[in-house]
Amino acid sequence: MAKLNVLLVCGSGASSGFMAANMRKAAKEMGLDYQIKARSESELETYADEIDALMIGPHLAYLEDEAREIVPDHVKVILMKPEYYSTLDGKKALEHLNEVMEG
Image (cartoon, rainbow, N blue to C red; front, side, top):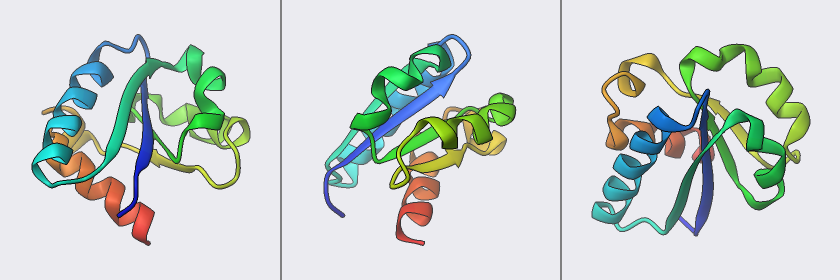
């Protein structure tokens, strides 16, 4: 897969920061050229034009529709699943991301 810019958002940016670090590590192990950043949801508009995918923490499900209005049409908006988010499993998060991007 080509280079991909991914933005993770959670409330404060703390848990998504750990998730982003784990996803970067997993992406490197899988040989993927992904830029994965974590920011708080308040910064979404700042980064919307730079990304290919937006992954939202499961506790922010209410933001999903709003996020779709903010980001350009080509950006995939993905609600992260609690089962890998709660354990900060970067590999499972990447698998979910790849499924959506290829689907």
